[in-house]
Image (cartoon, rainbow over all chains, first blue to last red; front, side):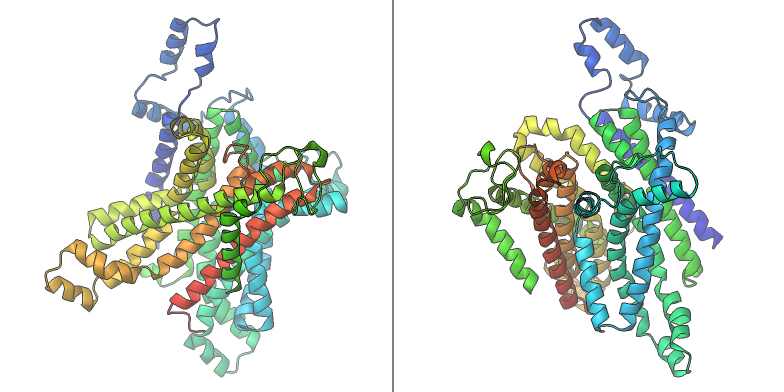
Length: 319
Length: 273
């Protein structure tokens, strides 16, 4: 088991380096550079601009620049944002908790929807419940998140005026009223993300549990006279959910991408909207750092999925 | 079945529609701006008085074309990579799989946004605004979707290349490429078709998301995602504008998903229940 773990960890590090290299190459190959506007600024003579470029290492070969950037990142020096005039890691740390709260809550909601519905639909396949649930699941993951977000804003904020549609981090009320305000404003983004993920997971849970339901050990358990509830929880669910767990972990990167869109619609100040704002403002250090954070999250969750799969499925330990 | 009908209707509508409904997409008419559906403008108008039906038919062509082309590119690249990895042993296979895993680990949406933002102007300069952006978007979306196809093809190859009919072909003296092209590949393509339909849906959603974030086609090209981007600030006074475009995306993706699911039921021998 530990050898499996160590092997997985060892593979993860070159992947991270590979991703950071790809990222750096893309940005290095792109036209334009941070000193672009200096070239057109009449107050700066070309010799000074050239000297600045040489000083900051923009003329070095690309591998050298990548190496310097990597060492700096590993030392914790994530750069200085051109636009916001603060250190990049301060910027990211300010915004990360909001994103994590929204995403965490939406995943919990998605699991709360997908697990019961998927399991029940698989235990009674092709029944009315199953067909309704499958159709709703299809509808759910065919609706793009930006569209559901807009529809929800239209219905709940504009027509009914029940929920605010601008996310504020400076809610001044404290105590129970403050918590209620937080919940009210987070309800729609969490619902949008959670329902979308829940719909696609329902189908997957259903097919994973269906694969287990027709196996012999379930028939044996029923023949032994066990209560249906015990059969479901101890035999079907425990075995059927192994692939689901890895799917949940593997889909986290997609959830982060979906969060980018949701943060744009609901104006949530998280790292997704930071990424878009910095792309549009051409703020390279922030773009590099945020994309690197996303890449780290992807690798982390892939690793987590591998570890969970190795732990849950006893057949894997014999590799 | 119903979804095939719906999808074909949409494809026909966007293909033939602009010849039948000859209202130009750029005709600005402030007197009827933000009007709801009426006989003159069956889907209403936007804030510049441009007819929405015409814009949606035109944008539909582009959205569906992006979806299909990106899928074609993803399937071709994935099949080639999977075939090469599946038929070779050792280092080439391991190297290609490492590359596939690397691409699978890349965070898709951030890199998509980044590449399009950085290279959009260069490609516009080379190939003109519309074609350049089309090529870039198709290349990038397709470039992120080839990995599952490659894995599927490789898995199919592993199971097929030890079968007797391939061995027979080898014994008759067929070269490796002939074995692959004439014997293994035609039998390996079943799951690829299913993955392909899912790719089309994913590509349409990806392109709509890019347009919605403002980073897709140039602003005057009314792809469905772009229409929603323009419409999102007018939701309270003109909801019809965003609703029709969103419903179009939803119907297209839904029917593609149903078709893919039906194909999977038809082609996958494992699903007994």
